[in-house]
Every structure is written in structure tokens, then in C-alpha cells.
Image (cartoon, rainbow, N blue to C red):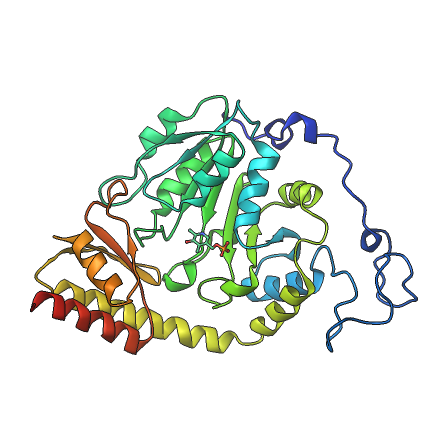
Length: 352
Ligand SMILES: *Cc1c(COP(=O)(O)O)cnc(C)c1O
């Protein structure tokens, strides 16, 4: 697939789909006597009222986020976590048993799980030893049934940004979708690919409220992409996919950007300190450079360290069986006292 053509990329049975039309689609005014949606007009079981169905397209939230991110509200799609846009992209574009996608291991596990759920085959092209894209190998593995290339930058679990040149090259040469998952972009010193939607009709950028915003509990993921792709996602999503609770709390969050900025600054400083401290430990072979809120560290004895920390109720992620992460553990940056507890446990281990 070389030339990008959205209609031919879309699964054939969805080309003429007529979506569910909800009561809130058919009348969008906010004033009136609402007897159209079989809600409970008297109120809610709770003292706060949630008796009305929420805005299916989250208009207010898109306007607020759009003005903060300098992206048109028309280029924003919200999902129940990033998991939902990931799932919807498979549903929209990948024909089960026929189409394939390209993954770049080591990377985030959901792209593969979601492919498996949808019976989509996967081509894996490992990152290079310094965790960059092997563009030549990726291009060589594209075939006529390849629909999506999944890129994660900063990458999980390695923590590094992927080079802009590589992403640019794939966007320009591949006729399918290129997804750039920027879940950790706020911890990196880098502008978002969402600023370049005008240039690339095949670009989808994912972000989330789960990391820098500190809102993992409300489940709110974002896809920035063309209006044409957003209209496809809107057609196939469940009608009220973002609850009123989530929309209201997200609006509150957007008012507290200064707090988020301060948390990011603090986390980045602690990450850099943690990287320096880890590098001093005699059983550490490598601290991978990180642009995220975690670091990947290669130990001489990763499994032993992992178990030792677990015994002390310090839980980190063992990535030592993941390709190109042999012997490595992924450590999320905690509060300063949590980080101290981790370092002191590692020192206790070394002196036992
Ligand atoms: C944490 C993470 C997400 C966020 O997922 P949500 O479903 O929005 O919580 C997305 N992508 C990557 C690579 C992540 O590590």
C-alpha cells in the first residue's frame, strides 16, 4: 500500500455504515423540556445529578483542550483511555484474518493484545540496539495488506524518544496509518506530532490523561488526527463513550495546568537524579536515557533484584524477558521518599 486513500483503507463493510443516532444527536440544544431520552427527570440516586446522558462528542472539553494544545477541536477524539482509540483503529481499518500491522518491539503491549483480540496478524520489526526505528527493515516488511504502523515515542518500556526523521520517512512513504503514541510526551523536551496533522493525512497521535496529568483513574485518552478519520471513529464508537463524571473532572484538570507543569518539572528532576544514582551501583550495567517518567535499568542480576524488592513490597516492572531488554527492570519515578526507599533497598541488597 503506497498511496494514502482513506476510503480504500477503511474496511469495506463500514464504508456505507449508518451509525446509531442518539437522542442527543438529534437535538443538540441545551435549553428545553427534555422528554426524548427516557432519562429519570426527577434526579439521581446521588446528591449530585447525573441523570442526563452526557455530550456524545464532548464539545466543551474538546474546545478547552484544543486551545491548550493549539489543535482544532475538530481534530480531537476522546476515548475511554488510550485503549479505546487503539481498539477502534483496529475495528475501523483492519479486516480480521486478512490485514496486518507492524509493531516495533520492545514496545507497549496493548498494540499486540488488541491485534490478537481482532484476529489481525502482526509483523514485528525490532528496534535497533539503541532503540531507534530500523526504517529500511520496516519498509521492507510493508505489504499490500499492511494497515497500521504503531510507533511509541517516548517509547515504553525503553523511555527514549524515537527520531523525527524516521517517523517522517514512514509517514511519507507508507499508504496506511502511522500511529505515534505520545503517552509520555510531557516528560520530554519535544513538541508533539499533533502540531503536524496538516502535513500528514495518515497520522494519528495518541495522548492520555493517565500520565503527566495524573488522571489514570478517570480513563481518558486522546487521539489527534484528520477530521476524516475522526468522523470514522465517531461512527463506530459507542454513543456515550465518555461519562459525565470523566468529562466534568477532566474540565477541572484542565484548569490546573500550573500544578501539572510543576509535577512534571519535579518528576523530571527526580528521574535525572535517579538515573545518576543508579549509575553508581556496582551491579548496574546500563541506565538507558529516559524522556519519560520511568527509567529502564540493566542489572547484572535483574531477576534477583526484582524478587528482593518484591519481598520488601517495592514493586517495579521486570522486563528482563522482553526482546532487547534482557536483564532490565523498568522503574517508575515515585515520590522522593519512595525513590529513597528504593535506593536504600538496593544498597541493602549490595551490602548483605
Ligand atoms: C500508559 C500508556 C498509555 C495510556 O493508556 P491509557 O489507556 O490512556 O491509560 C498509552 N500508551 C502507552 C505507551 C502507555 O505506556
